[in-house]
Figure 1 (cartoon, rainbow, N blue to C red):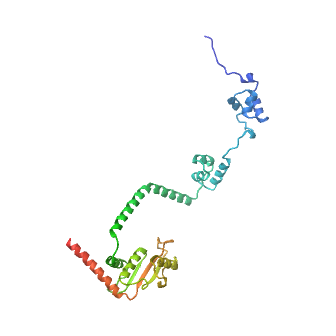
Figure 2 (figure 1 turned 60 degrees about the vertical axis):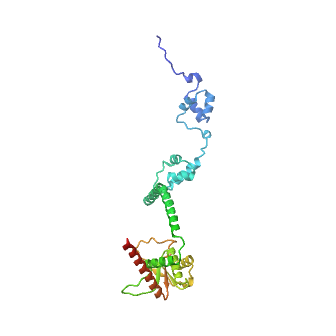
Figure 3 (figure 1 turned 90 degrees about the horizontal axis):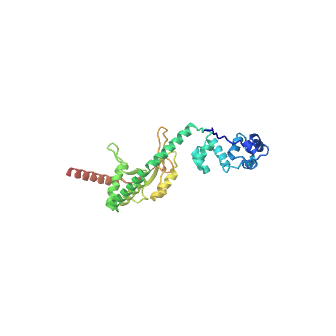
Length: 297
């Protein structure tokens, strides 16, 4: 059998053009690959092979639509912005933003990095618990509605019993070693104050009779707090006395601050010794009734 071999055709012999000529067309005449193909008859891949390492003429380069965005991404990265934030601001994918700025290391302040990680962890925790919290809130709202229907409308007797009970929890009381039979109620909850004021009205004490005083931390605004309490409970502003300011203790970690902090409201009923005795009597009867019920069981 004769030895048959297949040799690659000699393109120089076929076309008359070699790599030197092709490079000259590129560098001197500034021709594009398409124009060199038309001039020489060579294939695209062969021309690219001959032109390896030779830059394309400036006129043949197409402008990149995202060059401005790339420059902006680099500028943002230089200020310490992370890839997700850069991608979000420029409206590109994270992978694109990363390719643009991966050559620029991100240097963060250690404290800022700790804060960022804490914020991210909190966000992830919130996302994991969102369904549970929604179910809990729905169950809570249902329980509130059921309990609210059980209470219904309060009559005068209900208000007397309830008012006496909350006073015995939050009001000032006489001690065996210090008799002080007068009615003074202190609390920070406007709802509890509203109930106690209704109790006083049932007992025949109008809201214009007591004096009122705000007890508040010295860093807060006592006048603004007094205005808020007066508007919230419908109290005569002229019945408010000078506020009591609580001195700041630097060792105490205070959590009751901010715009929602209005201190405590002190309600003082003048000439209220007999009313105080009536409250004592109602509480004694409540205690006796509860004890009697317990012994019957």
